[in-house]
Length: 102
Image (tube, rainbow, N blue to C red; front, top):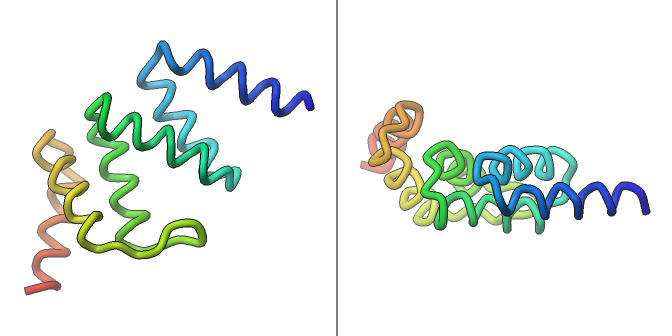
């Protein structure tokens, strides 16, 4: 019960802080709270245009996880977003993946 309250409290707090939402998503993913983590990542990716979250989620889709099936097409989309936002690891990963696919 206490853990759920803390998660709810953190969730309400993060609504007002985009960076906190992205960090919270990382924490939730590590704790295997995948559905809530994915919702937070999607907020960071699409609403906040966060390059790090775009890259992180892309790597999950690229490799596939216990929760997400591999989706290379969606991973490439997210990598492009992140790379266009200037995130160097995404630029490198995108070049690497495109090299493998060609």
